[in-house]
Image (cartoon, rainbow, N blue to C red; front, side):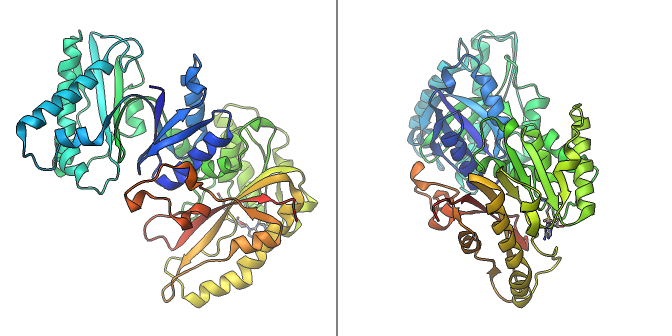
Length: 469
Ligand SMILES: C[S@@+](CC[C@H](N)C(=O)[O-])C[C@H]1O[C@@H](n2cnc3c(N)ncnc32)[C@H](O)[C@@H]1O
């Protein structure tokens, strides 16, 4: 079976949108054939046929912002069989025992051997089981999968490995209290690295659930969270309260659809701030350009970029100072031209510690943000290449006395000859029974990135320069 599990980031809709877009437009073409709120199942057109496809998977992992792990699938068990073997309440005991045996037979066939989870039996073997449920808030996860399925797998796999020749077989032990309470996270990428689970005699084995059944896979690549964290936390200039996350930044860069020849692609962030977007764009090999109305921010960005180049042990290119400029967004076209893409988080208004009144938010939009965004789109049209894209964040402000307030960005962009590109294409997805897993009408066009209780939410838009008008 040449299918892969992509473990999604915490904003799963956005992660799926990014992945689907990547599979449609990058060189590594493929399709999402099934998904849950935690995983997507991917079938590639060609990638799996290459000898060194694991290297390709590592590249994909590095490129995507919303992918925690990639695992190769070895088999699939339909949901009915799983529920028969692990029901919420056991009624027919014999039947349960029989179906569990059936499951073990399936696992037994994919565990050890050429092109299987473990290529052979080693003297000493180690595994960590990660179970990704369809949704964390379904009762089935804490009550059955964590309390019964996980211990079953831990024990039976050990027996199986010993039967196949392992002298010592150990498994990763989750804290007992988490198992008892059913409050358990599958292992995080840094644990995969810490426990060396990408080496041949050690493995993370993923049991990834969807509404259809469970996919059994071995992890091949993981996100390196430490590096992104380092960029976020150790750069000389940062503003935690307002910064956009490295993961969201990567996703936004990918929505520009510039997957080939990144080293020749010119990317601009005209509201550069402390330079988060440019730091990640540099890491992704783009030609970076940036500007800000605030000279101090321009200096901060340059210092941050120099810091990153030092960390990467790369030479500081002479052009950095000439490409990060103090410019009001109104005047972009006097300084930049022929950009391949614009990726930006503009001025979103003040950092509110408490919710503002509706009237305050409305005034901010009408007097400040709307004219500013209008200037931006007007200038962006002049400096972007044909069909060039903009990935743009716009604020949604939660007010005390009204509901959420936001601007009609689509209208502003249209008036400046940009067309909205829907961020997801629901026709490319298998439909789901659970409403929580369906891509609803409103989320087709844009998606929101926000933590619970956040006053300003970020709404992500993709626009394309429209040559027709
Ligand atoms: C939300 S911040 C961008 C933060 C950035 N993403 C980061 O990682 O630090 C918005 C930036 O827009 C800049 N700005 C505000 N009005 C501007 C204008 N008219 N032209 C250019 N930049 C402007 C502000 O100085 C601020 O640095």
